[in-house]
Length: 493
Image (cartoon, rainbow, N blue to C red):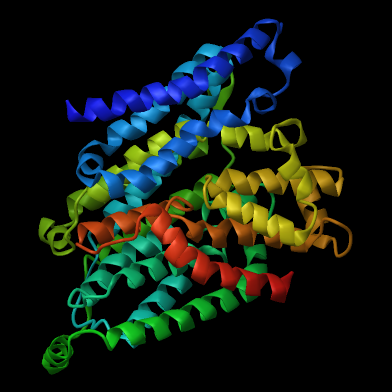
């Protein structure tokens, strides 16, 4: 009953914002003979249709602060409430176009997204690092450095799920732990994935659209500078907080007999390689499409990938001893939270992505047209990737840059022309800015990249108090990441 008292007014408020203007839009749409006469969906959607998306973000930010008990028990209903508040009038106004957009974002984007996260979460949950890992500044900095190195090869999600539990266990005795998880999100869940298309979805999209696999090593100087700056800041901060830990706890830890490090559940590394193999297969194989609806075609290789990932995850779960997962304090809570909240995010994010894709014909034309230099591509792509899905944001500005280049031929030939360009408004440095912005600035918020929220959930489940949505931005992203991004700008742009 209590949940309905909150959710019903929430839905009514959202609908009050949406229905009047959407109804007006419906009146306009009724005069159109076909969608083509109106232009793409993004040219007709008003900017305020993004209000439910803002509502989801504000709910994630505010409910844990003002109503934590309610949020803990009812966050799936809140996410669903915002999704319904947008989806019902959206379908009522735009009909088949809206249905196509919803089907596309769930079937082509959300379901594969959750399957990949679930597979990596399940496989990594069976890998146990045993032995003495004392949470000293040196050990913690080493773990972050290792994560930042391997993330480009096993993906930011893979690296995060592999290392977050050892990081938490190594520091279980400490009082000050929040900064450990925040910098873990910075380095392992985001910056570390910038060197290969395996590292982060935006780079994988670039690979699918003609960017050579090893071209992303062009980001290495930025990656190295940003990683070093963050590791130095972390080491200094962790050293300062380490000195504040109770001396008796430090002495007790130092007196304990060290236990050699070992890894249990090694067979799961084979499953982890299988996950990477299926992802690579889907990007390289060309097996044709299956028509789901008149406007939705799914590549066969993607369906094989998703089915393969489900089989890998289930097999890994069955072949891993329950005591290994228990030792990792494994539960389905974190992946369930990501699945529920991102289901609402993916629905309500549709107008923002459609308006961006409309370019100069949409209501964000002023923003798209203002992006006319390498440094602006870096910052605008990055800042939007902090709140929107960084993969379609990357693709939007990737296509904007290709269009501005004016090159002819196939997409691969246009990309080759951009990479070869050394002067003009659009050059290879433009593509560097787009890629770096999408990957690096995903660390700015909890929703900037999928592993961020999952790492937060695992940490909270382990009893670590994490900052709120806005607390993360105001206390960590702005004072730490923003100056680092300014340094990257000054050095490279």
